[in-house]
Image 1 (cartoon, one colour):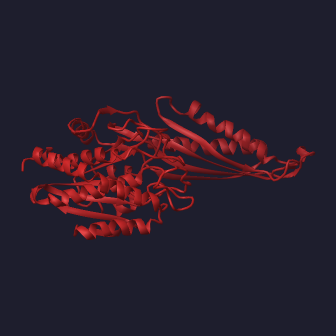
Image 2 (image 1 turned 30 degrees about the vertical axis):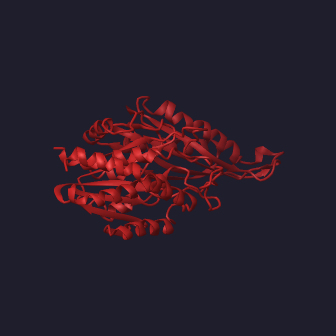
Image 3 (image 1 turned 180 degrees about the vertical axis):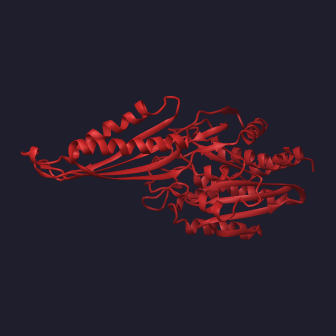
Length: 396
């Protein structure tokens, strides 16, 4: 069968498999598990492959699963990745497939990613003798929480012998049917910092006898914001956010301690090092001026996601040919982090967004308690990933 004829057959079979894809997604949606604890989800994925006799490896780098389909014709080896962890967020949707686990939900679409990849693998397995090369299906645990599952899976060899990798995220903020790509820096590196201010508490009526940790902390929050606006080149994209501030025990007591934490988002490692240096300089200076002590921790998280130019251009060209794709557009870089970055840091590849905005009701953002997406977008994602994987064998 010629490639175009084979693709048309696969498209039709994907459309015919929508009910199965939806059933998988909704089952996973009802039974979510948070990062690093996805044991039943991993077992579900393994059982799916077992029933089809598709060879796979379990416990790759942790809860990861890697399945492999070898085609009947020579060619390259292409990997496709889906994540499968959920979030510690209560599901507040009023739907029949609402999460049954208190305080846990698939509020980011990873259940849809998994359903998409499983059904695509099932159909490619059916046509394996007609396919060129090999196809590696990476089911990744713990995308939501650093240090995440991608790096340990890479370290465990999930990319050994792989020529290129493609991945997608169903995105509720983009119109369903759209494919949104970006060459180069697409998603930010994400770090965490923690600061503890140690003052000297006392009576609220005698502040002159104390070192007020709340006052020092408040000053520090203001000063930290000037790192991005005054110490980093305006052409360098970066974000510094203080997300928590905890201090005090009573309205008439001067607090002895204050604890702050926040996030830093960057696209450039040199900018990251500059920000680390400046945070500690500011903390040290503010505390010195107030006669306070401090403890400072900076925890590096995910690296920036940098898509490869050739593979991104190829993906965009492929997307233009996919039935049901209504728009192909280059998107702006965003400050959200994604540990797919570790795959494209190792081998050529690209990550893109598949629009999945609900056709009715409110399109709640990712990580919202009422998050949901247009399930038909899973078919668009499967067609795009499958086509890219198959046609990549013709790339020189």
